[in-house]
Length: 426
Image (cartoon, rainbow, N blue to C red; front, side):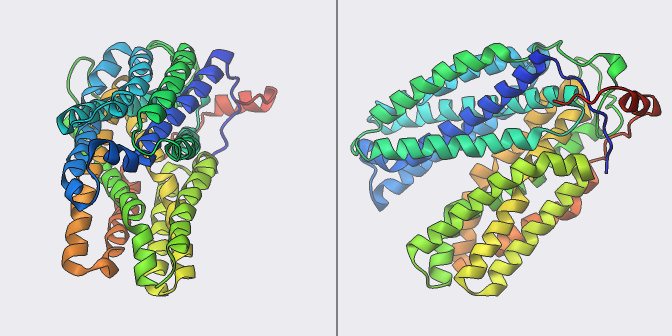
């Protein structure tokens, strides 16, 4: 276990941590507001039934393309200006971008605003991850899983609220999207004041917390070949985890219902347990990372995912399917935050660029995942679907830890300081 000293945390850093929590809740909230309003949104556009599937699929594709593009191109802005101005702009614009979707009645307008929604989502996600890494440097330990847990929490709470509102407004999402968009705009005005500026970094004397040696990338220049290859590799593995998550989110209910001959309610419960397990896992992910190191936790999480999918495939019953989904959710929970944290801490001066590369490749799972899953189901049948996340997470468990180095050990001087100083934590 890593015996890290307790470090006194200034109030402004604590506020920055709270602001990051709120920011991640906003991302999850808006994503699930969009998702839980989709059925009514399709009615509003006249895209109901199978005839509307193709056009709606293009709108959903536009959101995915926008997310990947926003994640990639915001990196240079983050490194040039810092996370605070980027997050501030996105935190105000992102909630407002969903409001026009409640008023559109034509396909092309819906597609354009869908792309804008995705652009802002990808940019805000990348900026908040970069800010989370910046806050981590003050705490000298992993706190990224807690941030990502708030994504799930925000999505659950506001998704339920939007579902409730759509029960009253069944022909248009104008009221749900407007009311919740304005609410989150006010939230953005509030938490953006607590963000850290570009030059808010720990004193050099306090030491640095990284996964390994500093990158040799120079300021103002592009990434070195080694760094670029590592980021692409991390992004590819993150892509695998996101595609695995999409397989459960999009097809999990249908898989449990049809393969195990159970009710729709029981199958839906299996997916809900998967989401709940992912939230619980993220609550404890940071403590596990401090205790065992990021690479070991990623290996353990990947192994847990493989175990969960194996139980689901070989169990052959609804109870074993639910248990397998729960284990898969627990395993999947900490992979994305820890890998993004590793990308950001490899080279703090270019954290925005590096996280942008990883996130861009990861977000492309929203584009590649549905197509790959459709090919598998069409050609091999629904029963073979869960082999897909099994293979993807098996590769992640094998190669992920190789790309993540254990944090440097604490120096003797810092350990002596910790033993003679009162223990104050953050």
